[in-house]
Image (cartoon, rainbow, N blue to C red):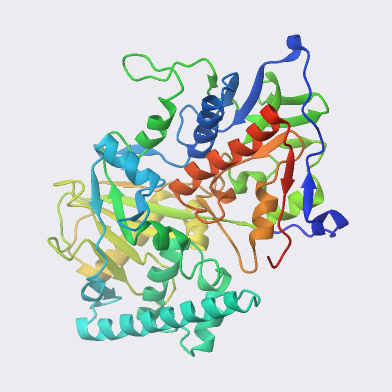
Length: 492
């Protein structure tokens, strides 16, 4: 997915200066001061920040029929389940996670995710591992992880080049090869990053800022109102809703698929798939990095080479949560049984399981997570084929006499042209320099999204905070004429 490009002298510049100084459009040509493309968490957060600064003449163009982006609930077998973001990650630390603060204010139903007993719930292709054997395998993986953290600190302290997590495992001579070792390795890395250790940066993930700053606890959201309630919570602070709670603000335009963004010295023109044309002084683009890597939006003139290179250096991961419902339970329930692992000869083959009795009592529902290449493979086959594979795995764990499922839900984020995945990852070697580039404005075009969050990319709080940060950059230019954007050179 990386695009080969020639380096230009622009790439090595320490300072990028906005190409276009603010100027006044003719009043008759102005639709808004700012157009925001996308109504996910980052887009809504950016729009609110603009509104709070007095820039209320905005238009939000959303490709779908709702706000929330990759925070999305869906009806499934009488339940309201989250097919996108599902956890508030980073809780009970020294700093307060802003999303946790919102969840508490909204009194969302959340459930602490306790993975401590996984060693007692690790299955193989014929039954279950002995707890003592599984515990030994977990201890070995913990030791390898601690070694990786120490290597990461040394590399950072001595300003050496980044390496992959897999390389650190090779240094320790602990590359997972057995089914149980691969399953535990998948749980430790792919389950969080949706990509394997061979392509995952050691320096940028060991440790993760989310857990170091906000705390190590995770809470699963299972509220009938949906996790998207946090996005609506932000939206209600500056947009208009009717008494029934429906968003009625005329500044939000649904089913508006942006296909072209054209800028000139006097402003921007944004065209949508249905032929509508919008004009503004500035545009804030909050689509995913996966969408930026496609041809959905045509930038006129083309984005400069340094910007395109920055976009293509980042990865768009795919994280798929498959929900399955049964007529009755056949798996263990009670304390210490919520999460269980399945070890297979093929790494990442329906590895991480969660029984949802606490979240949805009596629903007889399971959740299995797949990522990366497995997600893409599964998206290209029928749900019936996926169901057959899932049942084969469940029979390996719990025997042949288990019931057929009554329903299955397989989200398809990678195939969706409005998302092209679930969240971004910083690949090996990407530094603050590339981060500054991917966030940097190009003339009157500004960028936001979880992929522009230096410390919290991939998380809901990252999207929220990135929206605020990017909007402040635009505000400094639009209101105060401070349009210079500084990029720190590599190595600083």
